Length: 62
Image 1 (cartoon, rainbow, N blue to C red):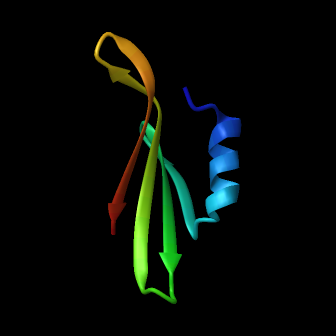
Image 2 (cartoon, rainbow, N blue to C red):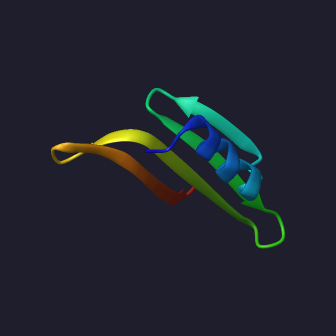
Protein backbone atom coordinates (compact mmCIF):
# COMPACT_ATOMS: atom_id res chain seq x y z
CA UNK A 1 0.00 0.00 0.00
CA UNK A 2 1.12 3.56 -0.67
CA UNK A 3 2.61 5.31 2.37
CA UNK A 4 2.93 9.07 2.94
CA UNK A 5 6.56 8.77 1.82
CA UNK A 6 5.48 7.01 -1.40
CA UNK A 7 3.00 9.79 -2.16
CA UNK A 8 5.68 12.43 -1.55
CA UNK A 9 8.14 10.59 -3.81
CA UNK A 10 5.57 10.29 -6.61
CA UNK A 11 4.59 13.94 -6.19
CA UNK A 12 8.19 15.17 -6.30
CA UNK A 13 8.78 13.22 -9.52
CA UNK A 14 5.61 14.44 -11.26
CA UNK A 15 5.76 18.01 -9.90
CA UNK A 16 2.00 18.69 -9.99
CA UNK A 17 0.64 22.23 -9.99
CA UNK A 18 -2.01 21.09 -7.48
CA UNK A 19 -1.88 18.39 -4.84
CA UNK A 20 -4.56 17.58 -2.32
CA UNK A 21 -6.22 14.87 -0.27
CA UNK A 22 -9.89 14.13 -0.87
CA UNK A 23 -11.65 11.82 1.62
CA UNK A 24 -9.86 8.59 0.59
CA UNK A 25 -7.34 9.53 -2.10
CA UNK A 26 -4.66 11.99 -3.15
CA UNK A 27 -5.25 14.09 -6.26
CA UNK A 28 -2.36 15.40 -8.35
CA UNK A 29 -3.05 17.81 -11.21
CA UNK A 30 -0.45 17.94 -13.97
CA UNK A 31 -0.45 20.63 -16.67
CA UNK A 32 1.57 20.92 -19.84
CA UNK A 33 1.26 24.43 -21.25
CA UNK A 34 3.33 23.43 -24.27
CA UNK A 35 0.97 20.58 -25.23
CA UNK A 36 -2.08 22.31 -23.75
CA UNK A 37 -3.01 19.20 -21.78
CA UNK A 38 -4.23 18.63 -18.26
CA UNK A 39 -4.01 15.26 -16.51
CA UNK A 40 -5.32 14.34 -13.08
CA UNK A 41 -3.74 11.41 -11.25
CA UNK A 42 -5.61 9.98 -8.27
CA UNK A 43 -3.71 7.76 -5.83
CA UNK A 44 -5.77 5.55 -3.55
CA UNK A 45 -3.38 4.45 -0.78
CA UNK A 46 -5.75 1.87 0.70
CA UNK A 47 -8.77 0.47 -1.11
CA UNK A 48 -10.68 -2.78 -1.04
CA UNK A 49 -9.60 -5.12 -3.85
CA UNK A 50 -11.90 -8.10 -3.53
CA UNK A 51 -11.20 -9.63 -0.12
CA UNK A 52 -7.90 -7.77 0.30
CA UNK A 53 -6.72 -4.20 0.72
CA UNK A 54 -4.34 -2.59 -1.74
CA UNK A 55 -3.37 0.60 -3.55
CA UNK A 56 -4.75 1.79 -6.87
CA UNK A 57 -3.96 4.55 -9.32
CA UNK A 58 -6.43 6.29 -11.60
CA UNK A 59 -5.64 8.80 -14.32
CA UNK A 60 -8.02 10.95 -16.29
CA UNK A 61 -7.98 13.94 -18.55
CA UNK A 62 -9.34 16.99 -16.81
